[in-house]
Image (cartoon, rainbow, N blue to C red; front, top):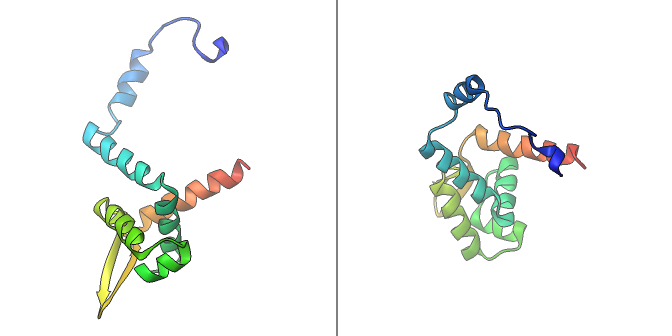
Length: 118
Protein backbone atom coordinates (compact mmCIF):
# COMPACT_ATOMS: atom_id res chain seq x y z
CA UNK A 1 0.00 0.00 0.00
CA UNK A 2 3.03 2.29 -0.20
CA UNK A 3 1.72 3.61 -3.54
CA UNK A 4 -1.19 5.43 -1.87
CA UNK A 5 1.00 8.14 -0.30
CA UNK A 6 3.41 10.68 -1.75
CA UNK A 7 6.92 9.36 -2.22
CA UNK A 8 8.28 12.77 -1.25
CA UNK A 9 7.17 15.31 1.34
CA UNK A 10 6.61 18.61 -0.47
CA UNK A 11 3.84 20.93 0.76
CA UNK A 12 2.08 23.18 -1.77
CA UNK A 13 1.66 26.13 0.59
CA UNK A 14 -0.59 28.04 -1.83
CA UNK A 15 -3.12 25.18 -1.83
CA UNK A 16 -2.85 24.74 1.93
CA UNK A 17 -3.47 28.47 2.50
CA UNK A 18 -6.41 28.52 0.05
CA UNK A 19 -8.14 25.58 1.72
CA UNK A 20 -7.28 26.73 5.23
CA UNK A 21 -8.99 30.05 4.52
CA UNK A 22 -12.37 28.43 3.83
CA UNK A 23 -12.46 25.50 6.26
CA UNK A 24 -15.03 25.94 9.04
CA UNK A 25 -13.97 27.05 12.50
CA UNK A 26 -13.32 24.48 15.21
CA UNK A 27 -16.75 25.25 16.77
CA UNK A 28 -18.60 24.73 13.49
CA UNK A 29 -16.58 21.59 12.78
CA UNK A 30 -17.48 20.21 16.23
CA UNK A 31 -21.20 20.88 15.63
CA UNK A 32 -21.01 19.18 12.25
CA UNK A 33 -19.28 16.15 13.79
CA UNK A 34 -22.00 15.93 16.46
CA UNK A 35 -24.72 15.96 13.77
CA UNK A 36 -22.97 13.20 11.82
CA UNK A 37 -22.43 11.23 15.03
CA UNK A 38 -26.15 11.49 15.83
CA UNK A 39 -27.06 10.29 12.36
CA UNK A 40 -24.54 7.45 12.70
CA UNK A 41 -26.90 5.65 15.08
CA UNK A 42 -29.26 3.31 13.13
CA UNK A 43 -32.31 4.13 15.26
CA UNK A 44 -31.84 7.88 14.98
CA UNK A 45 -31.11 7.58 11.26
CA UNK A 46 -34.32 5.60 10.81
CA UNK A 47 -36.27 8.27 12.72
CA UNK A 48 -34.85 11.03 10.53
CA UNK A 49 -35.56 9.04 7.36
CA UNK A 50 -39.17 8.51 8.46
CA UNK A 51 -39.57 12.20 9.29
CA UNK A 52 -38.17 13.09 5.88
CA UNK A 53 -41.28 11.43 4.47
CA UNK A 54 -43.95 12.60 6.89
CA UNK A 55 -44.61 14.41 10.15
CA UNK A 56 -45.14 11.76 12.86
CA UNK A 57 -45.86 11.59 16.59
CA UNK A 58 -43.79 9.59 19.08
CA UNK A 59 -46.33 6.73 19.07
CA UNK A 60 -46.22 6.56 15.26
CA UNK A 61 -42.42 6.40 15.30
CA UNK A 62 -42.47 3.77 18.04
CA UNK A 63 -44.76 1.53 16.00
CA UNK A 64 -42.87 2.17 12.77
CA UNK A 65 -39.40 1.50 14.16
CA UNK A 66 -40.46 -1.12 16.72
CA UNK A 67 -38.78 0.64 19.63
CA UNK A 68 -40.43 1.72 22.90
CA UNK A 69 -42.02 5.13 23.19
CA UNK A 70 -39.51 5.96 25.93
CA UNK A 71 -36.55 5.08 23.69
CA UNK A 72 -38.00 7.07 20.78
CA UNK A 73 -38.56 10.07 23.06
CA UNK A 74 -34.95 9.88 24.22
CA UNK A 75 -33.65 9.78 20.64
CA UNK A 76 -35.94 12.63 19.57
CA UNK A 77 -34.70 14.78 22.44
CA UNK A 78 -31.12 14.29 21.26
CA UNK A 79 -32.07 15.05 17.64
CA UNK A 80 -34.02 18.12 18.76
CA UNK A 81 -31.07 19.43 20.79
CA UNK A 82 -28.94 19.19 17.65
CA UNK A 83 -31.64 21.06 15.69
CA UNK A 84 -32.15 18.13 13.33
CA UNK A 85 -35.85 17.72 14.22
CA UNK A 86 -38.52 19.98 15.68
CA UNK A 87 -41.97 19.41 17.12
CA UNK A 88 -45.31 21.12 17.34
CA UNK A 89 -48.10 20.52 19.81
CA UNK A 90 -51.67 19.91 18.73
CA UNK A 91 -53.83 19.32 21.77
CA UNK A 92 -52.27 16.42 23.64
CA UNK A 93 -50.24 15.30 20.63
CA UNK A 94 -46.64 16.26 19.79
CA UNK A 95 -45.82 15.92 16.10
CA UNK A 96 -42.23 15.75 14.93
CA UNK A 97 -40.75 16.79 11.61
CA UNK A 98 -37.34 17.63 10.24
CA UNK A 99 -36.05 20.99 11.40
CA UNK A 100 -35.37 22.21 7.86
CA UNK A 101 -34.79 21.10 4.29
CA UNK A 102 -31.02 20.85 4.83
CA UNK A 103 -31.57 17.73 6.92
CA UNK A 104 -33.79 16.24 4.21
CA UNK A 105 -31.16 17.03 1.55
CA UNK A 106 -28.43 15.43 3.65
CA UNK A 107 -30.45 12.22 3.98
CA UNK A 108 -31.44 12.21 0.30
CA UNK A 109 -27.88 12.80 -0.92
CA UNK A 110 -26.42 10.19 1.44
CA UNK A 111 -28.95 7.59 0.33
CA UNK A 112 -28.27 8.33 -3.34
CA UNK A 113 -24.53 7.99 -2.70
CA UNK A 114 -24.95 4.61 -0.98
CA UNK A 115 -27.31 3.28 -3.67
CA UNK A 116 -24.97 4.45 -6.42
CA UNK A 117 -22.08 2.49 -4.88
CA UNK A 118 -24.07 -0.78 -4.65
